Length: 244
Image 1 (cartoon, rainbow, N blue to C red):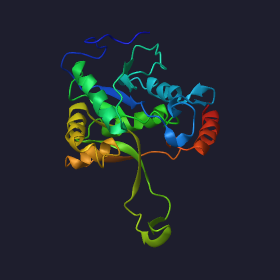
Image 2 (cartoon, rainbow, N blue to C red):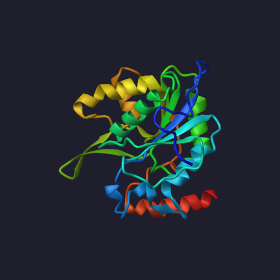
Image 3 (cartoon, rainbow, N blue to C red):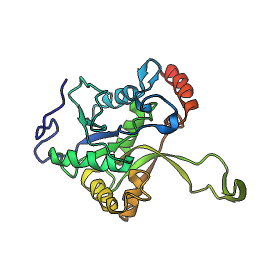
Image 4 (cartoon, one colour):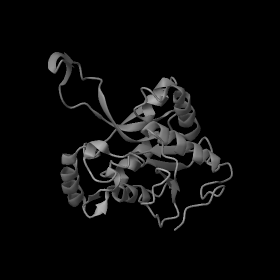
């Protein structure tokens, strides 16, 4: 399938109830993964990692579109599902790629009040149940939210490679993705951070927090981890095999 030509969009629609869309930043080089190609294209359990991710999102019927943000010269993906849109506008950072991708959604006529679920392509163990749970929790929320895990381990503060204090973990959570916010609100929050190079914006929730809002924390699962380092691929391989 070829993706829509400029000015053409499969998601434009008249005013009505807010719909849900997904956006996957997929323009990173994966330098920490130690792979010969971008890690999202590395084979895990017989398929490029990003294909496992896309399969989970395609299994959620409430998603109107799935936009994958890739580098301008990236020709790896050739989607054959009409819900998948390639946006060749990847930036120098994850935050810039997401912001650029959101802009293309607005340019294609996606209403600002629609929801967008941003998800790391390298979190290839996300399941349709994870995605559905986030939509269920956030669809009627005033702000939106993210999957996250209460911190399970003792947290240490370090100095020169040594532990100098134990930090109270009672109110600490590990952020995951997807993260679900209104398209217009998220784009405005990220665009406001563009001037200082998106400093301090490590995920979508951090941009929303900077705008004065308080995202909802929706319990996730430890399985939905981000494949980052070489040893993570072996773990993902085993876990994906167990999901079949």
